[in-house]
Length: 340
Ligand SMILES: [Zn+2]
Ligand SMILES: [Zn+2]
Image (cartoon, rainbow, N blue to C red; front, side, top):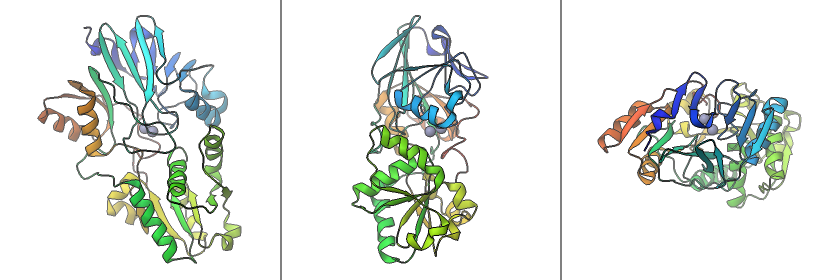
């Protein structure tokens, strides 16, 4: 077996598989990129050839237009592509619509680059698929034992109880435009919320795209402060920035909510002026990180970003060799850093 560290390397542009000639989620423009998912810290503009799922490519085109790559190639989950001596395929990561892990096989060894992922079920995307491998490359956003995400239905239940308790107030939820917003809507629908869900303008394009790609979200309406009386008793979704810059506070007697794994930390919620914190995350929590690492059975785990020290330490106790890659530029959108 050719050890993966010989053919999968950290470069200034990001993780590079030399025998295939591809970078994975490169942070600078490159000739050939594989993109795990559409979040801005993974999908950057200006690459030559871009390989990703059709959904991720559609999300990239919606977000960056021309910048989405000179040439785009869609690869379906489970389909194998040969790049030189490397066999490459994408499998679901369960993170956002189109999100994929990259499976690379070369010289009798298999590496699994997971991108961002979660194990909780998500009605808006395919579920994470564990693939046995020799090296597992993982994120570590919530890699501390304090981070345990409750079942999302439980958090949605808390939200709906608050809505029932304060029928005159507007519940406005801070959430990320890609993934979290659509998942919240789908979770609300699962919980039986039939009414229109109101959206801050910046959330509308990706919700429409999800609908075009076949994800059922029910009736969505644009929310404006001008019509705030119509929003009494309603649920409004807005980006975290709109919560921070007081857009939300101009609504009528709002209950400010925020949906993020960071809401586990009371202090974060308080600092952000969040009255109702909802612990809903699109990243694996501590238990799910360890469970996933056990399931893929890799003797070696490479940690891209996040709380790598805590994870590497926990792995050592389990006889797994951990290595912090310190990839720069990851964790800059969504929940990676100081969001909320
Ligand atoms: Zn992400
Ligand atoms: Zn990320």
